[in-house]
Image (cartoon, rainbow, N blue to C red):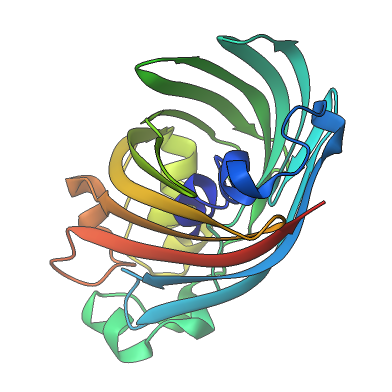
Length: 267
């Protein structure tokens, strides 16, 4: 679940780049992309659906750099292959933060789900690589990402489609967004199922297979003077039945809510 939070917010990657420097706060609004940089701090809060984990609070630095070709946004780095007013295409590498440690979950809660913590293994974070395409116009922006695990953690793939439409209200920008993430069987089985090694030790076999996870939310960013900006991003994910049935998760959990708060300074 961390990936959804830090992928929609921390990214399209930490936070959409436009949220880092509000329009009236950017003294160089007409400068080339190389002039766009921001540094700040943020905190992510989510009600983890994993058994016994409770609320998850994750502080993190906010680092954004927008060069002529190269860019870095929180957990995503990329190289612009095509950059136009309406269409953009980039090759990207992005951290996957869906990993977790068994010790952080509840032993009693896992046991109620039929899992013995002594038979289980931690799930690793990963590094994904792929392509990101965006189409923008008066009706908003559509972003498509095609990613594959390049670290060998899950060996799976993910495709995500996200629509957003920013509304400017003075120095405040409000951006509703909605989309869906599709995870291949290999990726979903790794993070929500049981591994062959765990099954061999006596854990129940569970494979959710490929899943689609819809989400919706809103990001609010406000300029504070000429260089500072603050933002908040709220997101809700609807868990599909195959994920809800995972023995790793709390029973009867149908969704997950995440909140991101941050403060950054543009340069």
